[in-house]
Length: 301
Ligand SMILES: Nc1nc2c(ncn2[C@@H]2O[C@H](COP(=O)(O)OP(=O)(O)OP(=O)(O)O)[C@@H](O)[C@H]2O)c(=O)[nH]1
Ligand SMILES: C[S@@+](CC[C@H](N)C(=O)[O-])C[C@H]1O[C@@H](n2cnc3c(N)ncnc32)[C@H](O)[C@@H]1O
Ligand code: SF4
Ligand code: SF4
Image (cartoon, rainbow, N blue to C red; front, top):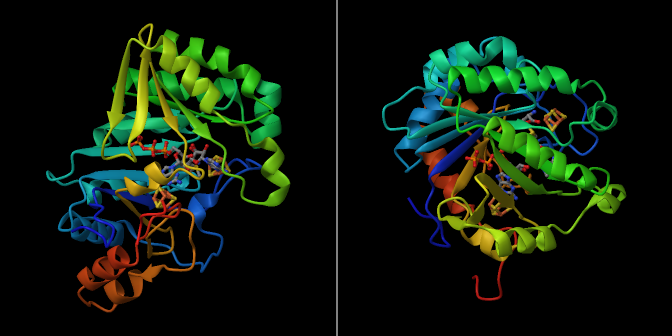
């Protein structure tokens, strides 16, 4: 099913918990500020996912909070599993990855993205409060070992870690990971000072790139191959092209369908009807109808 702006729905991003073992000062909490204290059971997540497949979803992203804090994460994966899904991935801070990697792979997870903004433990601690770079690196190694690949390193570009980008690039090349350079989304005015324009970095890499790939169904994001290293750019701010190619809907940790990451005012409760035994297809129709590009070009209606 397409939305009013002609955008297909191909991907469902599920936040399985709002809890986290780190406290990154910038966290956007997947755009969900409120907490209703509701939580979805693995079977409920499974049922919602199965319904989403009828609307064109082919890719599942598991996120949070920190998804590996769900003790029943393997149950969640078991319930999600379906032949129609082409890609099941997780975004994690990697702290618990060493312990979980094998179980995740065995229960149907295809790959992981691991967030790591610097290799410098002092700065990493400043950013995350409770983090430990070595632990994350061990998690990354284990994930690669068990085949949770292609593994992506999520590097959030900020004023405080922009000088660390070179080290992260080298590290990714060394371990054979894809590097994802993400534009910082300030969640309040005090954080504006950390925003860095990553366009000049992208232009520099583009000039030297051996190959350029456009991710058509992923917000037309550009991926560059440079001396064997794949570098993807996520540049959402004020980016009308990004939003006009957005094929993603979200499921919040407390059971609401969310038409857009950056809006919290148009959610559709899917958990209540599910618990009442009602047909939840109408929730998807409503969510898709409520979708609109957050950053709109002049021509968008
Ligand atoms: N504005 C906006 N930002 C997004 C959206 N999806 C992901 N992001 C940002 O992109 C960054 C990377 O997200 P990931 O969780 O690693 O997943 P992904 O790169 O989108 O997905 P894959 O490429 O399939 O692994 C995060 O910082 C998100 O905030 C989106 O729909 N809108
Ligand atoms: C919200 S976290 C949830 C998953 C997991 N806890 C982690 O950190 O990977 C998902 C992604 O959002 C990114 N993120 C968080 N806050 C952000 C912000 N203000 N701007 C851009 N990306 C952000 C993180 O870097 C991470 O890659
Ligand atoms: S680890 Fe992820 S969810 Fe936790 S605070 Fe950092 S960005 Fe947010
Ligand atoms: S419309 Fe834009 S901001 Fe909203 S989820 Fe899609 S890409 Fe992100």
